Image 1 (cartoon, rainbow, N blue to C red):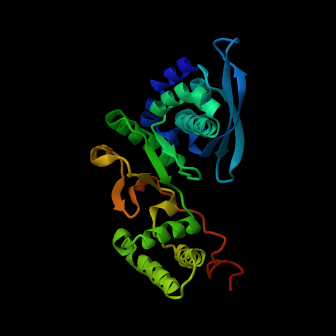
Image 2 (cartoon, helix red, strand yellow; image 1 turned 135 degrees about the vertical axis):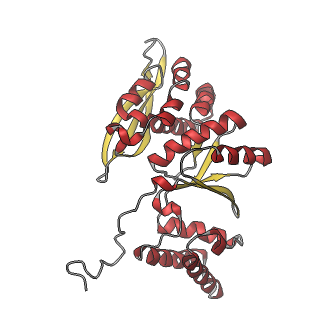
Image 3 (cartoon, rainbow, N blue to C red; image 1 turned 60 degrees about the vertical axis):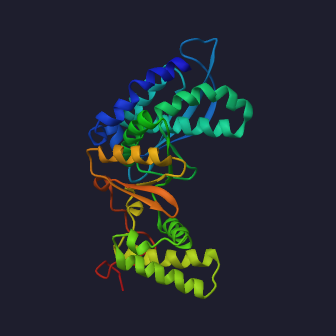
Length: 305
């Protein structure tokens, strides 16, 4: 197992940085890659040894077609991922790392067995996603490149605390900011949209609404904005991530800012204090999301009233 992971260290980090995912049909329409199952399997190098086999679920295209890939965490792992995913192979590697970390966290015996593997995976996948966080493949490949540069200089992983959001998750995030006293009108480019959210929050507070009721009020405001084509956050366009800054230290934050400043592609970085995190947006890979079902059809649409 160790030999197979060492082979990956010299190639997969280069794959994400050098290849253009849009040029490879195996990667162009990939929406998500997740590892959903694990079992004991014979190792390719030695039938006497046992490795871990994993099932990867690959979601493709606007219709979200699902295909399955079976891989073994040994010397064949790189070849399997590259053959199926092309330049998106790092997405599969992250999915493998994520599932093995979950196994290690749930079982002390598994933790001891997986410790050497996870130590090597930390160098190969220098970022981690908190449970439930989703980010687009285009953003993740760029994050993988930046996280690799940061890890080589600071020897620390980046932790992604937020990625793609809908109106509900955006409302929860803004509720937390407002509760902590953040001045969101200063934070967001869409000033009037931010003021509308602040007014809804203050009205809910005056009415002594619960957290759930307040978040629902913020969500209603954000949904109306989305229906008008106003997206207050880059997260709603699947073009941004939030990265944990707590624990980085002054040196780590300084190194990260320098790494991002030296990144040649379009990006925008802002350090926020409430709660403490870096907001990193990639403006050139943002996409316009389809019109949500809760929006009324345009007046010019057939059958609209």
